[in-house]
Image (tube, rainbow over all chains, first blue to last red; front, side, top):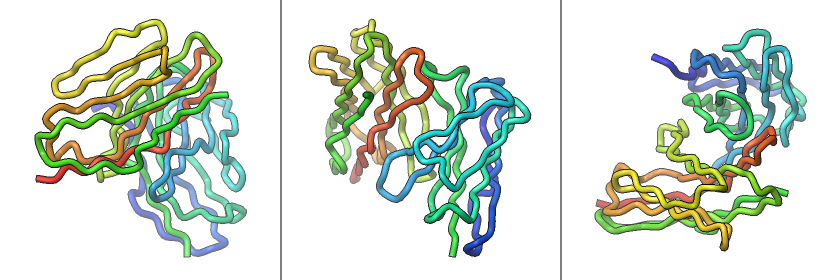
Length: 113
Length: 114
């Protein structure tokens, strides 16, 4: 089955700890994205990557980091510098950037206390 | 600058009613793409439709239909004979050709009551 997997579904961390969210796709898509969704709000772009070994900051990149060493993987690290990390994180991929529809993973709900 | 406005925050209907979700967009480009996504309670967004700016034909897929009007910069989504399973948050989105990101609206939460 082709698709996007994110793990884990729920994640709990103590304040001050870095945490890495996993995102893997087997759709052979070039582009991958990370979004943050807060309750009752839309999606805000954290980072995107349109090709392996290259990624760009989105609208709210502060306190986050990513890597794109393999086409199928785009992990997101939420660092201790992120002031308010508790949120729902969605990973997506598309054939290429801009005009193509995005396919989303099931999301990771991160709670930091 | 790109912008997508979904003015309806929440809509509540009774099963079998028709419902229209509004989407108004702003862009300076002549070539752009519009999308609708559905986010059920499970959380995963599901792609519904993509429309490019040169194709103003309305589209129908089962109980779903979309009305694209460039004159009013709108891309509205209608669900006919709504069902409880249609309860979800629906997002409208815009992407410009050559751009690197998609702009999402704030979403409209649809409640369909049995």
